[in-house]
Structure formats: C-alpha cells, structure tokens
Length: 320
Ligand code: DGY
Image 1: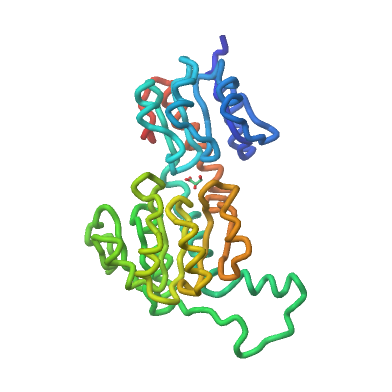
Image 2: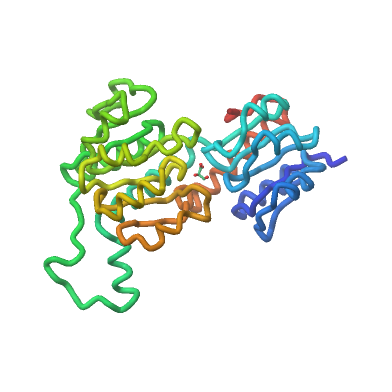
C-alpha cells in the first residue's frame, strides 16, 4: 500500500506540476501524452484513488460507473466540466473539482485575439506573406472593421465574460450582455443587460460567447440566431464548440452575413468541421484559451490543492 495517494494523470502536464505531483502523491503519469481510450482509462485506474483528467477525456455516467471503488476524486484540469457527468459522480460518492479563476485572464486575452484576428483579417494577411503573394501596400487591401465605438455583445457574463468586457472597454467597445443572471449594478460598468439572447443579437457588431457547454446551450448560435445578428457582424467563440451549429455558421459565413468568425474551440475536437479549414473569413486557433506557462501551472496547482485538501480530510475548495 503506497503512503501517498495514487493519482492517475491522464495527460502530460507542465513540468512544475508533475514535480509537485511526484513530491506529494504517487502519480501514474503519461509521459508520451498518448490519449487513452475508455477501456485503457479504466484499466489504468485499477489502483488509483484519484484521477487528474482534462477536457480531452469524456466521463459519461457509463464510464464513471466502471471506475474502481477506490477512486474518490476526479480533478479536471479545466474550468469547464461538461465532459464529466456530475450526477453520476455524485451518485458514486466521487468528488469532482475544476480550476476556476486561474484561467480567466488568459482566456479573455485569447477572446480578444480571436476578435481582433477576425475583425482585422489576420489569417488572410498572414497567409499572403507566408505564401509569398504579398505585392505591397494598397489602399484597399484586406480592409477590416474598427472596434472603437462598436457594440460587443457578451453571452455569459461570468468571470471570463467580465474579463473580456474589461479589455474590450479599453478598445472603445460598448458592452451589452445576456446572462442567466444580471450583474450587480456596480459590476456592470455601464454594460446594458438583455434578458433574452434574441434581444441582444440585433445590437451586436461583435458577439463573444462565454457560457458553459451543456444541453441547454448546445447550438445556441443557429440559423435563427445568426439571422438576428446585423449583417457584417463578427462571431467569437472561446467557450465550447457545442455552442455553435457549425452547418449554420459555415453557411452564413459563406454568404458573408457575419463578416468573420474568430474561433478557439470546436465541437468534436480535434476533428473540427472540415468546412472551417477552407473558410477564408475565419481566424482559427487550436483551443489555446488557457495555454500560457503561468496559467497552465496555476491550473495544475489548483488541481493538486484540491486533491491535497481532500486526502487531508478537508472539503475540496473547488468541488462542483
Ligand atoms: C477549460 O478550462 O475549460 C479550457 O477550455 C480547457 O479545457
């Protein structure tokens, strides 16, 4: 019997996080960062008391029910927990924790990068240079959109939505938002609240999504929602790919109805809808929202703080 709790770690983590794992736990690491299939995940959990997972592994009820009885916790290296069936975990007495707060600023930065990349046609510009087709400055080349004075609609005004609003204000954007709950007036900083998504959409030159992936938010941006956006709007998604009806988004991008989209997340990652790859007016990133050295370390430490609390007999601070 090991003295330290055995933790199955499903993906390779930053070095500083793995160092602390070795110090405080008995980790079963994945140095090759190979993606385990569902059977292998369960087999590797044989001696584990906790699993440190990522959003790349799905934990539906059927998978959670197969976990050995010794597993007491699932710590996800993510703020989103849509890949874990929380009710099934609760029914098994398994504590699930996530990593709130620490990735707010990095993710808000990526949302601004997607917004600017789409508005200023960064992909098309870079492609011109990379393929050696740039013949020099012209007055009409790759004209984009100004941010100053335009309206940014934010859907989901939680921590990340508010961090995006803070950044956007310094670019001169006016903020409107739709969220499950209206913010307290002192947190709105002049942002205009809409209690329905459909009421927000017609105002938005820019629209940025910051709500969790769930059955309720699935395909919230569909053909009907896209038709309510003004012609020439820019759609930004750094939350979850399932929020978009990809077929509808691609059809409307082809018609130039949204001017462009800036996306960091996709349904069925990494097998995104192939239509995006060839769509000129899309600025695409490979789920980099939290991908900074500082943030990924902080996410890892947050997972370990939660597991340490739990194994010391205390409540996990970020239990869901
Ligand atoms: C998160 O934390 O939810 C990020 O999107 C990584 O999955």
